[in-house]
Length: 438
Image 1: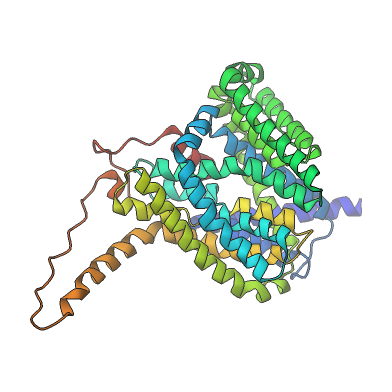
Image 2: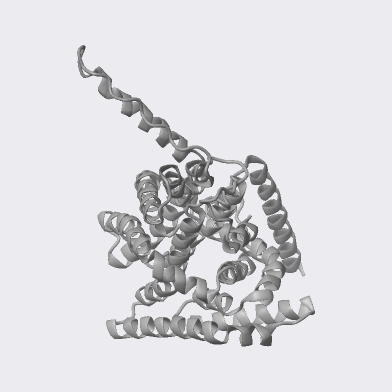
């Protein structure tokens, strides 16, 4: 009875504390993720007041949090949208991978952590935070901007790539042979391909079988199916997260909307528990030694994400201001980086503290980069555009810099999006993403 009482007290305190931190973050205008991580550090091993009674429960809640994160992410995309984005955005996806995964891999090798840790840290630095970015787009009123579909396209490519990357990483972490790792990868690719094929051809039938007018029944069926598929995927070394993501893709229409509405509060609760759990298992004393490498890596990969966004937006014909905004919006890292680091800490424990510090830096810097990258770039361009005037006393002054075209939707820095003729309206995917992660 004493253990049960202690469990209830600790759980109540954790959930209440998460609610207070979430409200505080909302008032400040930032993502609550860094506060959840700090809370985990404070009450974990080596923290101020270690929690013992609820550790096992929180561990299970963290697993559910990852599953729900990926399920609701999958519910935002239909199979046809994924295929379309893959066909049109794959060059941007390749650039994104090269510019942002390579710095993480190089950093792990320079630190002497080995090739497996290099693969893991490459994923940590590669993947942007869909949750933070969707919330930022909504907060800044950019859902109708021309660059928003480009941003979402890059995120879709990253999410789809996770369906291949996570099984590969899981195989490497498990120490499987080349044959075993190749088999795991083939299973993952076959599973993804099969789910996309079935979702494209028979998605309505699947949704109809799952559909129910009773919210309780819909919740139980979707949640039960997701956890079951995630468990089977984990058993096949494909990753529970990928299994949940594929379930989300397979559902569409009203079923996806209804499930999204019912599961969003659960996702928010268990996702918060997941971030706290990651902090609980990170010793705060291990962060200072890796703080400088984390800061250097954050600065480098913030720049490479801006370059990625510029390239992707330029391919889509977005104007200069929209290119800068695309890059700045993609800077934030978050849930996927922590998921990857959580998988890898068994092989290289130092990845955990480094990933925690890295995510803390970029989850705070991300919203700032989204808001200020374009204005700062515009001012610097105008300023350095005038410097040649000092070339000599008799030099002919250069022409005044051309002003940027004013308010098309892709030129607005913030505020409610407008709808000129050359700016498409907000896509349903963008709107859903903002509601999902807001």
